[in-house]
Length: 240
Image (cartoon, rainbow, N blue to C red; front, side, top):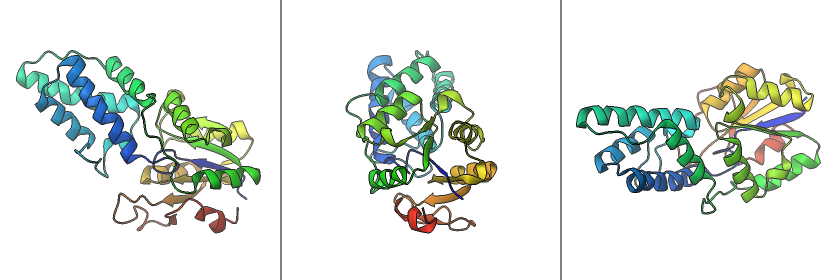
């Protein structure tokens, strides 16, 4: 019997691609403006993150990585550029992390809830389910996005990258279960990636995938798990 539902955030509850594209478009502008990063380096950093002029690649590193992992990838690419072109790298990992956080908290970030998310969360809360989030994002950015889309109040637990080993490690689900007084076999995990699916399998929880409009076919098609295109479909499927 399902008593708690643990959601991925980006691509499951909140729109991901246009939001992250917006943040990182400004991020690369800031690297050029503040650190005089050369154009060739900027292009190599964009390639490393899967950042195209008008969108993110469906396989973008931003999809499933924590901010420290993103910063490490950027430093690795810039280090290679610096060695080849005898360029003095002017920013550190801390500088990059602070810039990502600064831009993620900007008032101009277009955080948007996906269709039917507020209504579905409201229904589940009325039905007395424990609701949580398991995300690779930071706590401050997570709270900012949830508050801007007016869904923050529905959650009993926020699991973020600040306090955990990232998915598919079970830490976030373990904390959700402990805090809410439920067992792993009483949890439904909802997410839009295979990483979320592996997370659920490691936890021993129920799982359902959310199909993203940015991919031509469901990433869950050749798995044993069901997927839906709209989050409100989970209500009927699991008789919630």
